[in-house]
Image (cartoon, rainbow over all chains, first blue to last red; front, side):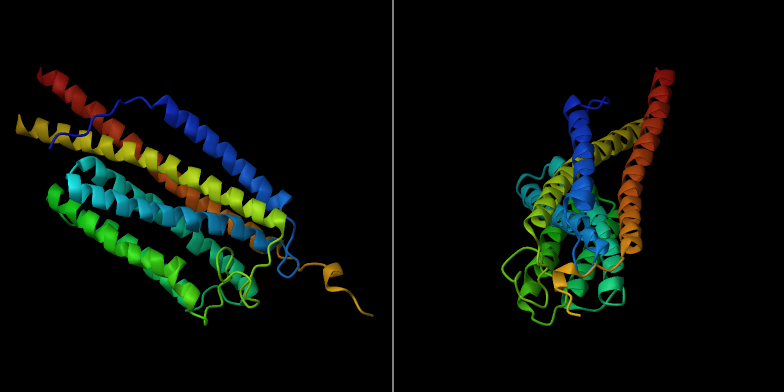
Length: 240
Length: 57
């Protein structure tokens, strides 16, 4: 298998995107810390939600990209789609890790304990484990074509855990997790009661984390292509 | 004396906020660092392989 081609120097578009994303992150931090007002019941800790929810959104987006890449790989069989899917799983997992590690800090204050086996939290943990398993299981498959096929199929099936986490649990009344956006926001037990400035900060965070995801994905894809090139040259050298 | 809800001071939860963003920063920067380190390792490998190739020729 020959590697997909790539210039060793970083494309100007990626450099511009990286700088722009860094500036967006600075602006999102300003909006989360200074622009949005302090929430009356929880105080400053509520500001965690701007990045917590933004990262969750970008993680879900990453796993949706895995589905698209998986379907495209199964249709075309091109290694490029396998690279996109594999890279997107890794970036998505990093983003969901941000969500799963920052949430307990807020929960410690709000619920008096960092974790409960609430349907939403349990579903999010299952989602994280599903994609962590994707990375581990992939490493155990030697044949590249079989590995890519496995990745494509697994990535499509694992998306069920994302749907369950972000949409399915909305229909379970037992959840105590706040609903920030969507049809069940407004239910007194779980509604965040956001002011317009809070909503603006949240929306900006969604946009910022969308850029964070695409920037990291591009870097990760380049890394995978470099890895392919090194592997191919090593194999060529060994064959001589 | 009755204090309207809107005039109550919010609880002091700044320490939770700081801890939360320290964790967010650590996870985010940790992942970026892992990308940088893997890229450096691969570039080093590529240099060695290319040197071996040129030695062979």
